[in-house]
Length: 166
Picture 1 (tube, rainbow, N blue to C red):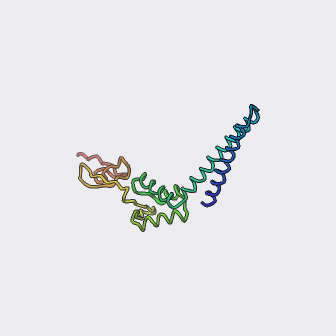
Picture 2: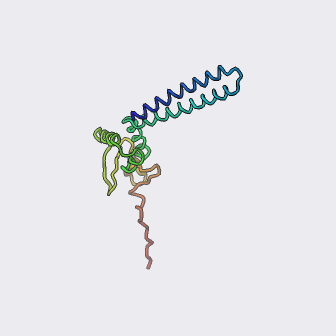
Picture 3: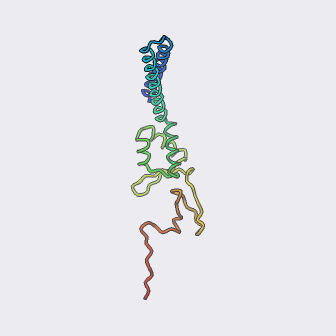
């Protein structure tokens, strides 16, 4: 992370100096074409270096504890409050900072660790959305925006059998 911040600083500073040099070339061009071309090239290179340095800064900020926490909470909100450990590993990777943030959230009570079969789930109660079924009156958690009441809707793999008439 520190290397990314230092790299971002060096690239941004170099970009600013290169763009300033290009501006000086443009100012002192005095109608000489190759000076104009060198000035434009330096300005473009400076802008590219500034953008590259800003990208390093952004990546370094995302790898901080605060950035990981923000990204994890956004993931929990997008997943309606239930996030698999594998999703966290894919989105944020496996690092000491990610583990630290998860443990902090567990200690604060902002997240709960559950196990469903072989899958480890992290439940974020703040993002769980509940709905009351209009038919049976039971409360259920919305796993997706179009979730249906598990008490009223048939389970997966369950098929209605036709009545046998004699």
